[in-house]
Length: 219
Ligand code: G3P
Image (cartoon, rainbow, N blue to C red; front, side, top):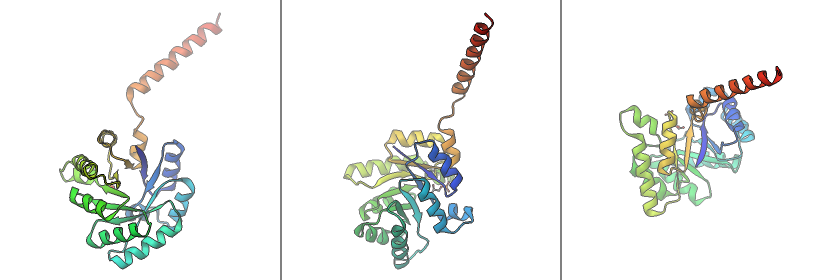
């Protein structure tokens, strides 16, 4: 399973990359906007830190605008994956990109039919937003299960990228369901290893060790 960080903040991305298990990065216009930096600068900084797929989203909503932005983004670096929303014009743009060797991450997916259409158009990744579905009392992870089943039924190789992750349990469920990628905010990355019994256990081991050192050194 691949782990991506869902962030455009270079310090967060650096810290996550230092863990040694980061496979890629996803950004979106809101995340880039938070940095206050020009888009190109944000992408260049990320490209220097992470050698893996980096999703960069188009902001045009018409086919011509989308494919123009997609070509420009893809030309920056081989690791750039163009993020395109699952709207009519977006679907056409995904198909065009697939035919022209540009990898795409189909975003803003909220139902299984959108995911099926994206796969048929040749999207490299599908991004179902699980947290935003949970937020409106739908079961976000149920969508992941549905998409996984549909893709397996027909052998689509579009990768299931679980997005809008809110907590580690989303990551556990994604792994159990066989999702290909989990993209998570840095707050969730930091929680993946946390367990109170680990902390208590380590504290006890170190205290016992210290006791031994004190007793042998006093002999
Ligand atoms: O990048 C897409 C997605 O992960 C957004 O997540 O937390 O804004 O719903 P969120």
